[in-house]
View 1 (tube, rainbow, N blue to C red):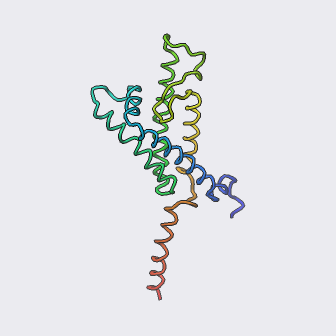
View 2: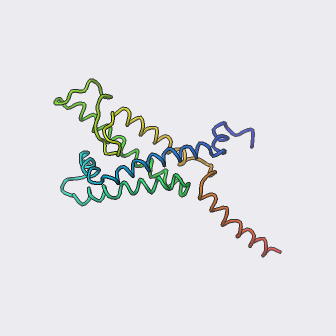
View 3: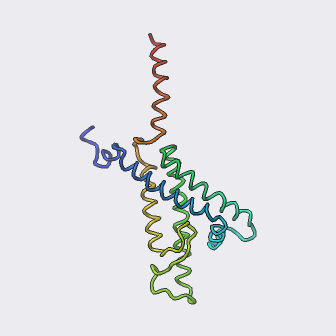
Length: 185
């Protein structure tokens, strides 16, 4: 290793931060997706509470409630196995960048509602539709930010150690290299 590499670059080359981030984000996404798939009707109802999709288009709301958990599960499996890691991380980042502000806005609406009496913003508790039941908003926002930061690691990591796609690439390159070496003789 070159002595000129930064500490972060040397750490990244080990593959350990990538592996830990993949396991954390993939594991959480798998758990949350499975929890949504167990009770799709409840997930549909909770998705409706955000008011992002118009009531005049129930097909779109139903389609979102069906597709979203499967998309999360697909990302989770890809991250856990290390297949199309950057693509899966990009989808995870996009989902988190979309849903985290929505959670915060929904919590703010509940907090600002004069009919409700919350001592502080962090005391706001509701079922966000994430698959974990009722959560305190500050805990959920912190969890989402941690997931977002962790998902950035596989997105930008130069390493592909401990990734299945790197192993598969090496296995396909070996016969090609051997064939190329045989033709050069």
